Image (cartoon, rainbow, N blue to C red; front, side, top):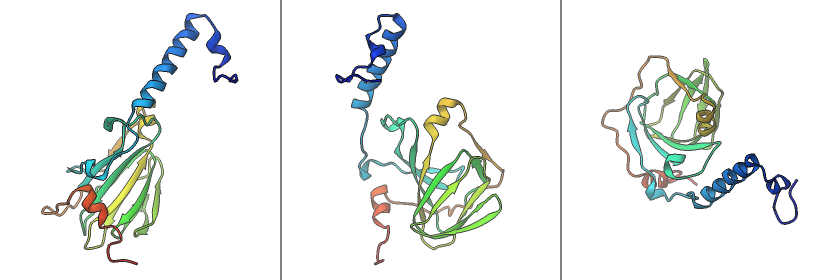
Length: 185
């Protein structure tokens, strides 16, 4: 229980064990204070990922300098009229921000459009299909940092291949994000 000065009683202990714990906590506090707190759209790097047939860009991850420990956030851009390979991994939340299509989650077809949110449970075989003539953009939220820490990070591919449009290119993340809801009221 914390005292009024913000110190916890165990911190008053003189044992080496308590002192090492306090040192770890102090170092953790310093790391949090210096960690990245935001990312500007022009700083997001979209990269083509052959295995999945998508462009992917990190929005919040440790490798970008954030001190996130529980969740990680990425942007995925799928080519128009394409599909991903069938795969499974730990749980994810996917927010559709552009494009239309459907996903197959353990055999169940779920149609989606901008504003829809998918929950992909841990170990659920799934595949994403874009049915629109425009790319689909999704924000994926995953508990990767904690899964890495627990040694449970995995992704398994069924063996099929994505169907990317070979000449498909995207602009910068800032340009692609600006296309969301363009021309819609």
